[in-house]
Image (cartoon, rainbow, N blue to C red; front, side, top):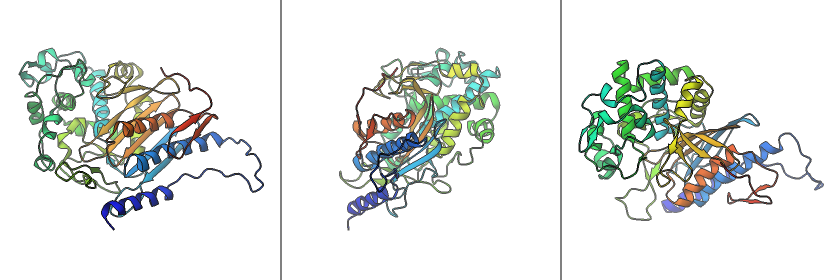
Length: 412
């Protein structure tokens, strides 16, 4: 059997294995009597169908989610496989690379230091890192810390330059933060006022190091990871593997012919992301982090409000309606209101997202980055499904789409 055929067989079997059970009608065929758990069962089934669409319709090998809420408590659902070679089922407890969700951790530490009077959010970068941003029309005297965290600094993204090289030239390479900044400064200026750039967060990490005397990794560990008890969250440094139980990640290798099964991208040196993308975690830990941040365990209400001061994001870089604060994305929910959180992608294929809404939170883990607009829409739809209460008029279908007998509430 070819690898592609074996992969299809493994995915189908794992999808069936991890299906979420829904209550069947009784033997007499009597009408089902509503119970307090009916809404929760509906919500779990709806999200399971969304994840099933990502696996069977969009070609993501494995997808998992942990949901926390005041209505149904904490629960998980997973679809597909964590490892295409062994067929090991995907689990929400598996570690993965969370990519740019790291940015919210870094922003939290910067805001903590601002609350302590050690960093000024509206102070120029030049105050902390004199001479770092100079040349090619870039000037650290005219860029503030807030603009770094908000992606309005006007700095380009070093990742674009690095990723343009053949993968094997940089996949296992160590990068120094200042090297990444220097690479970014050789690039053309962005042509939009809001321009997503991991370089902004590499610089923010250097500012933290300057004012504390400790690297961003040590400060995130001391100020965020240990206080919240995030036992599965850590900085890998130059280690290219992932410790403990984890999912594999997959990416289309441009060096291979089109139609070739994706390459395994689990082994990777993520110093290329640094303070803006290197953390490893689990869906449970990501949920605990956002719950702690929005629950007042990391910053006060005043400083959380600073983080939630947003500007419109480029819809081509994120999606329509998205706004960006200080390390936080705000996005409208289909049921009204907003979710707050961050998404993350790494070159090897892991995709993560943590979000918190009015009634709870969700954290998603994918083993491959969605590679089409439909797949990306299905990914974002899973967030809405997890955070919006399932209405009695919602009837989830097997392909993850939903038919409605009434119009949904308009989103904000």
